[in-house]
Length: 153
Image (cartoon, rainbow, N blue to C red; front, side, top):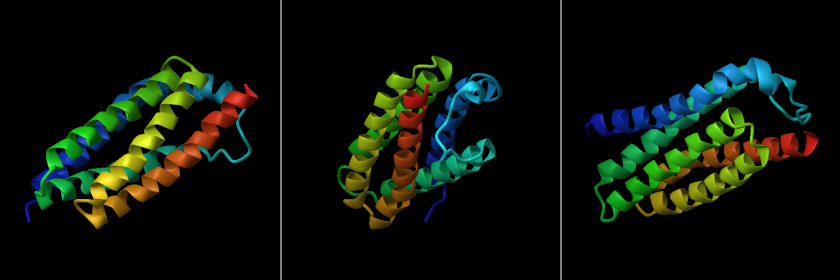
């Protein structure tokens, strides 16, 4: 088993996080700090480590699909990459544009894409599909935060 596909997809996944953070980091101590947030909002320091762990798991899952070499993997990988664009767009909408409603629509779309990815990944590797479940759970939670912030502000 070669590690290159895994490292490649981990790096690509982390890149989506880096792109999103370009719009996020300056806004956390300013605009984001000024928002009224739901009582279930975690402390700010938790988001970075959680997202990094999720990006690594996403990359491992995509790498697993690639390494399995099963028929249809190219479509699944393109779908995975497209979903990473939507993932990064959420940060642009929420933190960059301060568009709470648009970001809620984007994260809803992201949630649907993750469910579809889990289904697609499962056809190639059950392990890859399971590696995406924590991501789905976190995005479900983040969706409630986005909706709560929209409602409160």
